[in-house]
Each structure stands twice: as structure tokens, then as C-alpha cells.
Image (tube, rainbow, N blue to C red; front, side, top):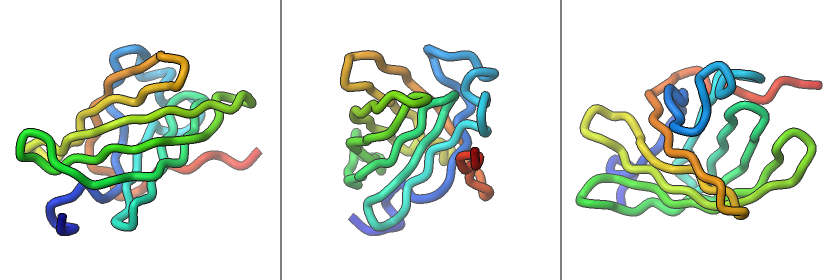
Length: 119
């Protein structure tokens, strides 16, 4: 799949169905980033993950599927996820924890990616 047909870039998480926006933006503005080389990163609330991403298609639209490892505050966590790039340029998908918790999300393009604050 060409880069033009893949999800690539920095996105601000604007909605999660399991968390209010104040939590999503608690530590940094919630974000999800996909680079064109199969890596990515996200953070919402106190959950931070680094992703290994595969570009694909779902229902004829550019999509990404990934596994991730990271932390929820100090606890190690991991899981998987997916996103589909909608016609409006917004990815919609789901972040899934290995223990079974999950939340759908919607994001919009953001040219300034959030980064974890130094402690």
C-alpha cells in the first residue's frame, strides 16, 4: 500500500467513548501518531503506548492495525488497536487493552504532536 493510501501523521484524540475529554487530556492533549515506517505512539489520560503498525484497508478505506506496549501510570500495559481513515480525514478506531478493556476513539489531524511531559 502506498504512503498516500495509508494513515500517517499526528492526530489529536477528540473523543473516546469510555473516557471524558478532561481525562483524555489529563497529562498532555490526547494524541495518536502514525509514522510511514510502521511505528506509532499514543497517549490519553495516563496511558502511553508505543505501537508497531501495519497499514491495511477496511471497506476500501486506508486503515491501520497495531499491537502496543506501554504504561498506565506506573503499571505495564499492552494490547492492540485499529483505525480507519474516514473521508473527512479523521481516523476512527479502537484501542484495546490485553485485559479486555477497550475504547473507541475519533481523532483529527494535529500538526503539533503531544508528547509525554518530563517528570
